[in-house]
Length: 112
Length: 116
Image (cartoon, each protein chain N blue to C red):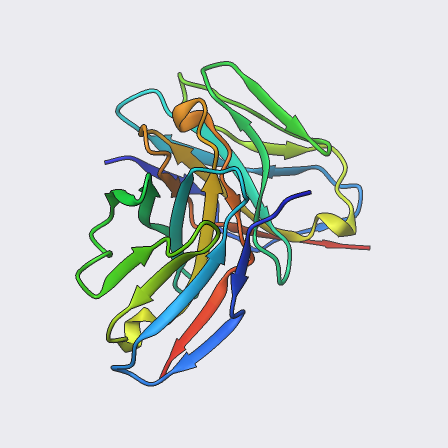
């Protein structure tokens, strides 16, 4: 079945460092790919998405490119801030009813 | 900005008791979902709901679970007889699903259910 694998955390970085969170997927069809972020005490918020191969999603300085050849959707940010500390979830949407399959989540801690 | 709300934020119950978790989706959305996250594990899909009926459900969503849209605004998840392993964070989500699987789901803040 469809699945998402993302790197384990926590990832601890200093402010202004480069962030990469790896995400790979397995799907039989043509899924859409999402990154959600969960700040402490809050719900899941969509960070960015890509709906077909080679699409790049971007938001708030974060980017991810849908790579069909490597079945990946890695999240990157060039210069993180303390306010980026959160849990990041990679997710896949592959059916007509919109069901999302999530990765395990990666906690990111950014220190001043 | 419209948002999905959930109540209560934390529910503590005794094993075997019934609980109802409540959600108010975004008002013009037509597709509703419940997910759960057991502590330290993945967010898991439970059920999707459209046009007053279940459109898809996972293996987790057994006969102990039910969903309902009792009025035009609320969307509820009922667990008939809670078990210890039902302890988790439960997230409600909604979508207007114009474009199928590409559409954004908007999530509520979650209800933490603790079964003792």
